[in-house]
Image (cartoon, rainbow, N blue to C red; front, side, top):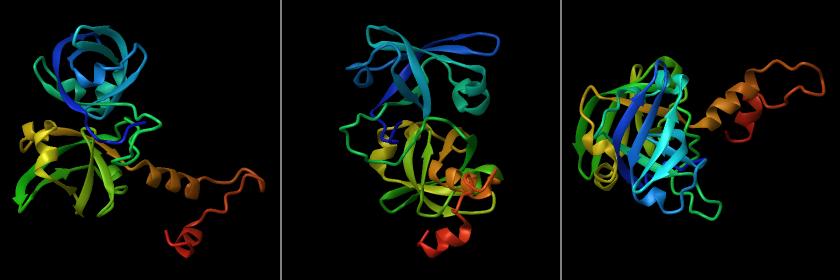
Length: 216
């Protein structure tokens, strides 16, 4: 589990590509301070497992499904990537619950300044937009961000200049592809409300009416 608070920006050193997979070599410092083989590190929001450690770098395998569902397939040597270690049990929860499992990718349609904020408008598929809520949270390339507005074909997130400067948002341009992970709570609620009960004992009492009556 992650929080969407990027710890550092690393850099791709090399990529070894297979027929449907890849091995990333990533230069880093902060996330390696207590890293061990088998640890989870989010790379642009994608949860990857450390398979090998070196001096100032780590290696991670990327499987076929991950390449198909994320923007990691577009990385090249020297690409900058957001890095975050899995959340420590005694750490502060500064962002929101992020699993590191990308729902889909989107593309940046507009970037504009709004006083002390930077607004990024991102085009996304309907299957993703159904879970995007104004003033809710969304992870973009592993960054926990606030949704400023939602439209029929996309949504806008708001970031302070510090967040932009300390993440790969500083590199993003109109047309770039970004990883999107929606807030998982909405997906679980939808699943529970829609799932047919197999018998009376398993029948869920969580309904749309129940949630509305209890302030959700």
